[in-house]
Amino acid sequence: MTLRFDKLGMVIAAIVAYAAFLAPFATFRANRIVPGQARSMLEALPATIGPLLLAVVVVAAIVALLKTPLGLRLAASVVALAALAILIGVAGTFLTPAGNTFARISPGSGFWLLIFAFTLLLADVLTRLNLSPPARIGVLVLAALAIGLLLISGQWVSLSILKEYANRADSFWAEGSKHITLALGSLAAAVIVGLPLGILCHRVERLRAGVLNVLNIVQTIPSIALFGLLIAPLGWVAAHVPGAAALGIRGIGTAPAFVALFLYSLLPVVANTVVGLAGVPRAANDAARGMGMTNGQRLFGVEFPLAFPVILTGIRIVLVQNIGLATIAALIGGGGFGVFVFQGVGQTAMDLVLLGAVPTVALAFAAAIILDAVIEMTATRRRVETA
Figure 1 (cartoon, rainbow, N blue to C red):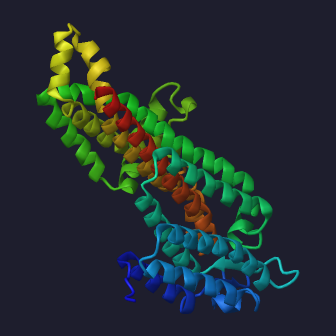
Figure 2 (figure 1 turned 180 degrees about the vertical axis):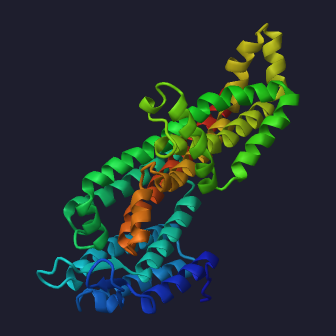
Figure 3 (figure 1 turned 45 degrees about the vertical axis):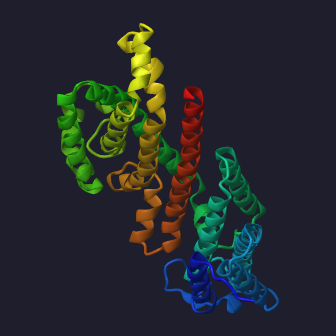
């Protein structure tokens, strides 16, 4: 019998081999800022559990390496991820000295590499299964529920990132609210301005090149530089325009961050609106004209519905982009999860960095999956309606 190897599985197996046998599974620190001491998987877990987890990840890697059925690959990835998620909490409890409130136990690079490898395997399986959009959203919900249950159960309470959260719980939710408000608010403003501008650029060809070139230039300005460039004009507005300061407009804070994110959001919205409208079949427009529809009726009854999946793709790009860029807003007092990232960098406290980075990545990942599913459902419905 000839063994057949999966190309992606070879990569996954190599990552697992390094992560399980060479990289640290967890890191012990006497307090939050001192250098950490690496602990391997067998050192970080009780004697009866460490070998069991090692066996699980090795078997899952073999399943990924060989050309095995999708059901088996799905089960292997889920079991490996569940075991890692549960047992990293066990490692935190095992490595923390009794009664010691200063020690910090963090997941090591080996743990993160194993999570990456088996998440990659799971994503590959789900892609091959070609799940429907509602099913993909269902998988996301199940994953969120599983993580929520682990958090509620206290399984991870001994990990340093949860200790950082416990010390900043109120601040965490306040900054999280600011982060989401910045990302969604700037997106909403960009849609309100960008959709009419995109329609105008589609209708007036001479205007199109100039507008898109200007927005392209804005897009090339580094985010920190753009935040800085906005400080002076917004500071002048706050000082000289009556009522501006009362509305929260000032040189630093939320206002420049909001304006910068709004400017970055315009290009994807405007460009995708132009592309979507340009892609409407000529036959559909001709049929609408033959029915006696006015320009406005054709725009909102025919062109815009057909272009909507492409426009929604631009909105997806903007939302994921803004969730990430909103992190930088903390540098100018705009708040958001970036507050913890930059505090952690300043204090050389990586767990505080993770407290800001992990929810940012999770939000961007969830937004991408949900909007991808909505785009696919919308495109499918439009194809059915026009068939």
